[in-house]
Amino acid sequence: MRDTFQRSGEVGRDLLAVDWAATALGPLEQWPRSLQTVVRMVLGSRFAMWMAWGPELTFFCNDAYRRDTLGAKYPWALGKPAPVVWSEVWGDVEERIDQVLSTGAATWDERLQLFLERDGYREETYHTFSYSPLHDDRGAIAGLLCVVREDTDDVISHRRLDALRALGDRVVASFDATAAVDDFSRALDDDWADLPFHLVYLYDDEDRSTVRLAAQGGFPAGHPAGPAVMEVGDSACWPEPPAGVPLVLAEELGTRFADLPTGVWTTAPDRAALVPIPTPQGDRYGYLVIGLNPFRRFDDAYAGFLTLVAARLGAAISGARAISAVREREHQIADELQKSLLPDDTFDLEDLDVATYYRAGVEGTQVGGDWYDVIALSGDRTALVVGDVMGRGVRAASVMGQLRTAIRAYARIGLPPDELMTYVDQLVRDLFPEQVVTCVYAVFDPADLGLRFVNAGHLPPLLVNGDGSCTRVTVDTHPPLGVGRRFEEVHRIELQPGGGVVLYTDGLVERRGADLEVGIETLRAAADGLDVPLEEVPEALVKACLTDGPDDDVAVLVARVGSQSTR
Image 1 (cartoon, rainbow, N blue to C red):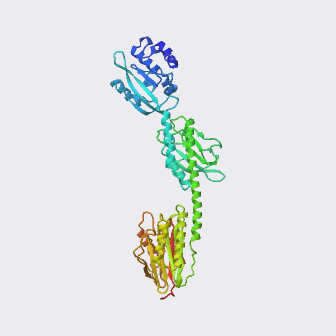
Image 2: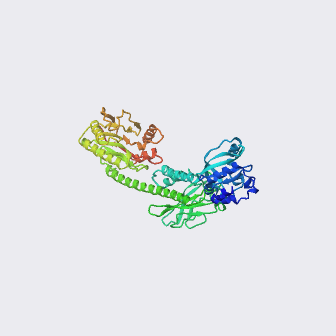
Image 3: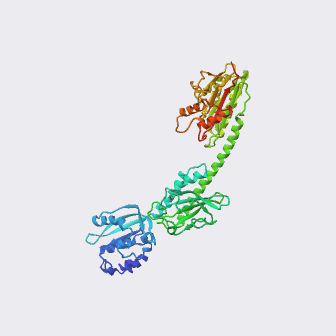
């Protein structure tokens, strides 16, 4: 065996230096031929192997295993009992080894997690390996051979790539930076291995004198390690990383904070990385505080991963701010467009008093396609219009404007309600087939106090009687505009002196998860006996129906017959 050891490089020379006479195997000259053969095989292989032989399972390994796995245990481990060499994981593998030694059946494990102590700390590692029996000269099982591939770098790299991919998949474009940070923080919670805890601090003001806690993962509220506000430059907790530095480490956390989050581990991190959150212009929004995996060495790969995490957060904030700016500009355009299309809220009519209300919702780009109109016709008649183009933004406002203009033009040439709506129906089919449009078109004639109207898929009008009582007008409703169905009937109701009609859009009565009929009844009850000046009626109805304010567009038109009007 001496010649074999001398020809086997560094590992062979170190094996030759072992005092084998002091081990359970005895002097080299007494080794059985079977042991010599398997040792030569192990040393000659370029695949990582270790073996154990004899009553104490004396440890051998080759150069590939020394390089890949053994670490600082080399060369001390050579000739030692294997249970001593790997005492920290023997409880994890002992059952497998006993199976091989007692039955001769080989084992197989793929990417088994083992916590090795080979470089001065307890390290998270992964190994694919097989234990196989070794036989002596008489054919009895005398030891075992382990052929192994360490997969630690591959497992950790894929885990981090999966985390970065998940951040991209789960952090969708948000409408504001607060939502983006919240979404990002929840996504980080999925990787408790490399990110046991995190804190997101963003600059509070223009001069950056303070940072505020925007999100956190792993900490209970009020934990002393996660202060809500910190003065920049105050190093008592988490100091701001210096300019131009990719990250800094905070050490010995266990001496500063109790009960730090552990993530998936049973041991809390003793170090954290403070990583700037970059802006597209090379500045920073703030910085991340990330607890480090206590079972991994902090190396360039770990630092690069954390830098990418912070960069993803910076991109999410930048994207949210860009979307917010675009949406604000779109809202301004739509708002200006809609204001230019809606009529004035004062009307000079002979026999009819009118009050209106319009309010954009608070969701999305806010301004939508709700509209109202009041059109003076020949013979002292007045057309009242309320409609709704479903959707929001410039598109809905633009479609609304074109339909309002068309209805005004058709009304001015004297078309009766059914013919007028037939033309508008055709217009929607030809120009806006993808839009859903509802509308009530009504004409008031003071000669007989009659209100003749057509309802194309819209909400029912409310009739206010001369004594102030209010009832719902229940008639057959035509489908929304654009379906091409013939308008069969013009409905007529009679208004009383001092009475009138309430027309409105669904934003006044419709709520998610609530019955629309309940909303309509709430409106009717609010209008019933309402005793306020006409100009205050629309807003009073809105306050009664929308106690928390509108979250959709709302248009209301209230018309009242003057008390002097007669047939």
